[in-house]
Image (tube, rainbow, N blue to C red; front, side):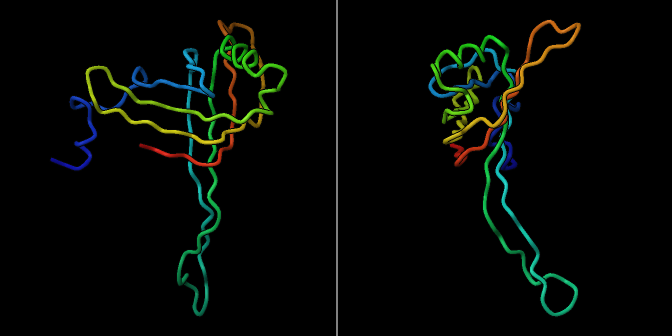
Amino acid sequence: MALSDLFLINGREYEWADISLNVGGIDIKGFRNVNYKESQEKEPLHAKGNKPRSIQRGNKTYSGSLTFTQSEIIALKTAAGSLSLLDIKVDIIVAYTPENSAKIRVVTILGAEFTDIEEKMAQGDKFMEIELPFVALDIIAA
């Protein structure tokens, strides 16, 4: 058995239907996309010759975005009260909870702050999707 097989759920990968999303303590039902990433500055260190001698590491950053339906944005704005969504700091919890399995994976995105809010619709659209990019303090997977 391969090591990666230990993380399969009944022989399959996590699916979209397995994901739950909580933003600032609010369970979100109308989310259409979630992405997050961890990055680190890296630079080759050159000395004698033309090949790098090592790779130097710098700062880590955490970012991503959430895409919601318009009604979820309205609910978040209502929960924020008089504050703009750009002024709040939230923890984001992404839980992968497959039906009929105990293999739950939880990713906690700590101290996320949204950087942009753009609402738009075009002819032929059936609903509005709003993407909220964010930066965060850390991403912890358990």
